[in-house]
Length: 204
Image (cartoon, helix red, strand yellow):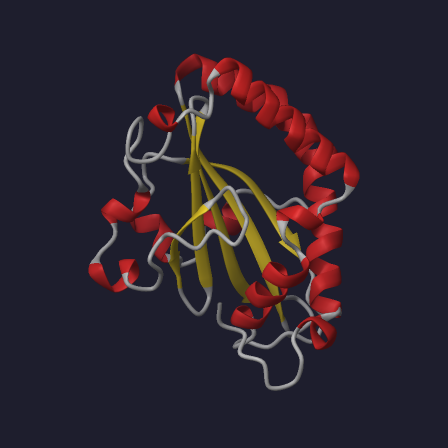
């Protein structure tokens, strides 16, 4: 479910310390019935197991395939347009305590690189010729007395071209990608007993 930007900006996340030059583009919620305050690592684990990019629905996989093909043809995703070249990684802004929560290399098959991971929030990033994007996942109290997952997408578009790109892909995000993610991640939570056998360590 789409939420107002304040649903992210009003939370006491560490991410706010390092992203004043980013804008909050989208905020989305995912229902996790029965979740408790300490279940964020479990949610991340079932997302990695049952909610990865390789397991997206055919329409979403098609959209991403088209995007990567265009990127290859137009040079959007060349190394010189990415992290550490065109833009500085957000990891370079972090204090030592956050940098040490992940080494930044285990993407789990996702195009997003890990930035940091805490017991109630996780950040990944992606940069190319169009935009520098952050995906923030947070764990917050829900109206039913439990907890739920929130996803915020923060962006720094690359000039006028990047702003136009974000405007053009907005309908695809809202009508196809985010609803598909909602179904996939909420199903992964419901199936957590199957995805994480009893006694399994939820940490990556």
